[in-house]
Amino acid sequence: MSELFSKIVLYFEYPFVRYAMIAGVLIALCSSLLGVTLVLKRFSFIGDGLSHVAFGAIAIAAVLGLTNEMLIVLPVTVLSAVLLLKTGRRTKIKGDAAVAMISVGALALGYLLMSVFSTSANVSGDVCSTLFGSSLILTLSKAEVAVSVVLSAVVTAVFMLFYNKIFAVTFDEDFARAGGVRAGAYNLLIAVVTAVVIVLAMNLVGSLLISALIIFPALSAMCIFKSFRPVIVFSAIISVVCAAAGILISILAATPVGATVVAADIAAFLICRIAGAAVRRQ
Image (cartoon, rainbow, N blue to C red; front, side, top):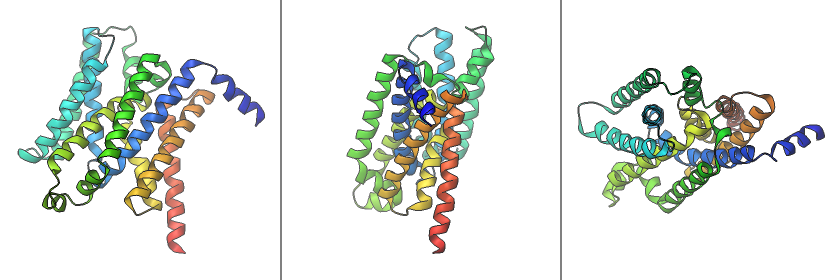
């Protein structure tokens, strides 16, 4: 055990490990805060759709040769979130169909662009890394970590500042409207914040695994608690612990970071499910 601890301490002497841990924990925290709301509003798959849009935007940025992908990825993902919200409500294309259409279309176009306008000798490796987050979190620069810290702080502040309104819109949108809450505006806020979290989470788990980062901590907390605030707090704790454990395990065992973090979330969900069932039997 002491040898393992010494090895972990040694790894933390490297800046890229510290950067990965800081960004990973903050991303996990933001994802968990938003995840409970998305699960309760049955918006879980919007994360999946927006992550594929972000993948397509990354492909465009690569083709254009942009060194700062965030200049394209963040605006495009936010715009898509707004369009998904509007499309699901005001047109003949229902929400789930709109998500599927945008998701598959962006994924296909992104891969097509990266293949046709290849800027690397290893296209398959680049695509795999972007889709599954195999090592993206371990290659963050100090500037990228700073952006992650700022965006994470903004997401957390927005959630805390508008907690009561988000709570009202999450549980009973019609009642919230009747009480004078501008439900449409807060739904839009949730969509925009979701887009920001998706862009951040791509660095940790890749575009295909983002939904797991959002859904599993929320479902784990719901197995134990039934009230909104305890679920939020416990979800955040689980998400942060699993992210930190997943990053450490992936470094020590040389496994893909994104898949390892999601595996830790799955293990936590199974433990909470068993614990919740045992408590209900008593």
